Image 1: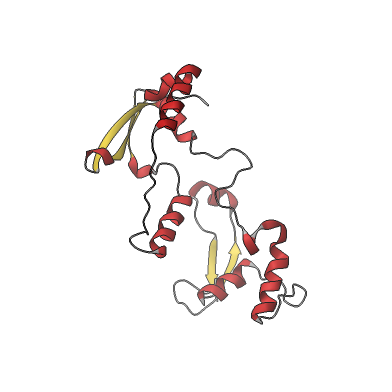
Image 2: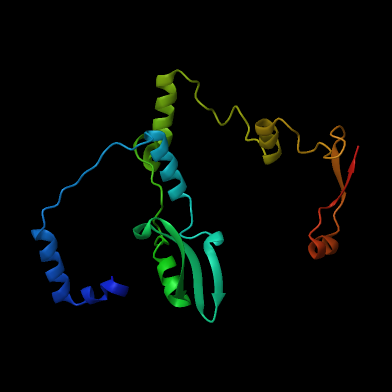
Length: 189
């Protein structure tokens, strides 16, 4: 690991060791209190954090002359919104620090949802809750159209205009489709 920016001097082993000694001498007091909004707020925050990209497109302001300018909140200066410009390579380096290495996942399941024993534990949970087990042989897998209809209550085959007839694909003209990115020709019956 290499330190960058204002921490660059810690790349020297002697400086790094001196820094650690200063940290060990300090009396650390950890103060924690319950979250203000309760567990719902904590879970809401964590779910947003685990499903976001390091920086969203709306924060990017400008890319010119090999420099990237983006919006940020300066918490040290009263939470003011400011612009920061970085060299494109430095911006990419910082962005890539948020990309997980191959084989790592952001969310890991523990307990009864853990991968090695998930199927066994879920069947045990169903048994303890008195819920009938899922038998793959009895219920055939539904295709995406059936699932859409079950979840939305609407048929994908229903005419989007009159909402009465069924949509039937009459013809698909590939060259026309690829050029204009238009839906295939349909007729309602």
